[in-house]
Length: 352
Ligand SMILES: [Zn+2]
Ligand SMILES: [Zn+2]
Image 1 (cartoon, rainbow, N blue to C red):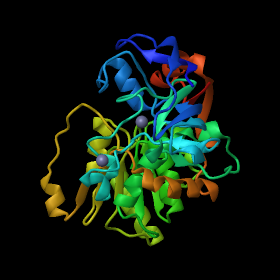
Image 2 (image 1 turned 30 degrees about the vertical axis):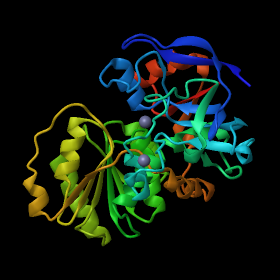
Image 3 (image 1 turned 135 degrees about the vertical axis):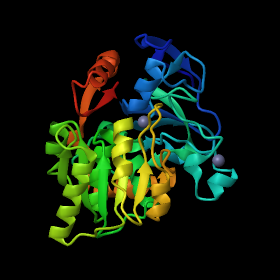
Image 4 (image 1 turned 180 degrees about the horizontal axis):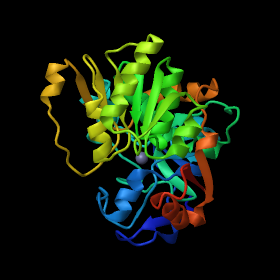
């Protein structure tokens, strides 16, 4: 049956989101109707809102691609999903193409991203293809379902980057930028057995992560990239950590962060570009050749990795609670203002 829902849609760049009451059609074959428990606000939403990045689907559009919720209705063939707590991945691959079948589903060219290609989670309900939804699989201690919204992007994106970087126990990992994605990246890399360093301009973020996997943080306002590298070299020598092959994760999405991350590369090191900026940087790419280093970009996360990421939360190795802040759905514009003006350092999560 159709359902009346409330959503907040983007109508034009630079304008506040507008509330809309809509009638949502019943889910079709292979589709789920998800009652949203929480939807995180991501840097990408801010890029859409400012007009820096255009949404794939024309406006008006409901933003939000970091969703947890409960399936309240299912189309034909999906009955087993009703009542299930789910994460709605930020990337919904088609499941049929060569990339999907070749282990690169996150890069699927027919993928749908909620809040970009289809209406997203700044709403009471949304429609989701069942093939890409992920079952939470029972309660996760210390977390309510709304808090698990961050799994859909802030947790799984750095998880996939860590997997693709080949992160192993004993590795040295460095995260440049400790916002939502970088902060969870620190927890994940630590959970996977790495010694984790971080660079940020916000001493509060460095302080908070100290009890969540960050071995040592560097304040980029006090130390330039060269000084950070010198400290890292010294620290690794003192502690018997590897001097080479560091895994560097650029999670700030800033030119300064990208320059810092690139300059931290060591021989046989790996650089993962996880954050986004539209700005350009000038780098000596030949450093990759001279250092026999690897650089790659990471887009979202294959839903196939979600269960393993959820297991890290279930095992208590990664926690969302100290890093999220709850807002009511009708406070969406207030929450966007708070995060874009850096008034809060937690991930805002909208709860209908
Ligand atoms: Zn995002
Ligand atoms: Zn595909």
